[in-house]
Amino acid sequence: MNNQVKSAGRVLDVLELFAEELAPIGVSEVSRRLLLPKSSAHGLLATLAARGYLVAEGREYRLAQDVEGVWAARSLARLTTIARPVMERIALSSGESAFLGVMTADLRVRYVAKVVSRNEVRYDASLDHLRQAHCTSIGLAILAHAEPTTIGRYLDDVPLVAATPRSMTDPVVLRRALARARKDGFAEVRDGNVEGASGVSAPIFYNGVAKAALNLGSPSARFNTARMSMRTAVVEGAAEVTRMLARGRQPVVPARAA
Image (tube, rainbow, N blue to C red; front, side, top):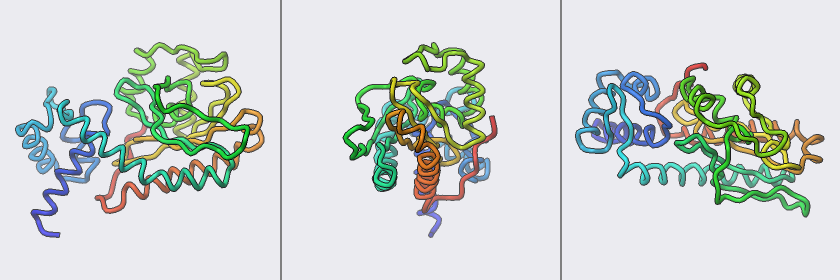
């Protein structure tokens, strides 16, 4: 790869990184995530800001609003294309419904793809509305691996409204659940978002950030007996999607521990 092609690739890497971020990030973080010298990261950020692709906020940067939608849509399309075959496989092998979800900028969960179980009695969910992160295993799986400031913002600023009587609404309990999900590599919710439905989710990482989560959801009666195999399927499936997202990219460094 010649220097011109490498430079173009680095510009795209930076734009894709910012398209996936929930908050502004600075030179040091870009350097760490993309394994770039700080001087190179600073030059790239300054150039992109001067050309209107990034906006400076103090010592940090965010993607400019007029280009954010384009890059976010591109990133989401790539994610769903890669994840779809994995979702189809784990839905078929488990007999349950598979979902792919992401976190929005206001820390809610958007389901972006699904493969519904072939069972006549099954769990299904709309892709048309947002969900509270603390009520879903997708939300817990992503939020568990977020930066401490993002977790703090969620616990301090987001009303912990119950979707069902089983929803977590105590900040102390929620913080413990996030710590457990981070340690275990998956999150489970039983009847917390929809009564009678339960699921397990595992995070999908890109550039060291939990960008999305893969989920298997089922009627709670079946979940109680199948949860171990469902857990294995989503953890392995999310790891496979993570590997495929990273192919052809520079090595990534895991995010800092919360």
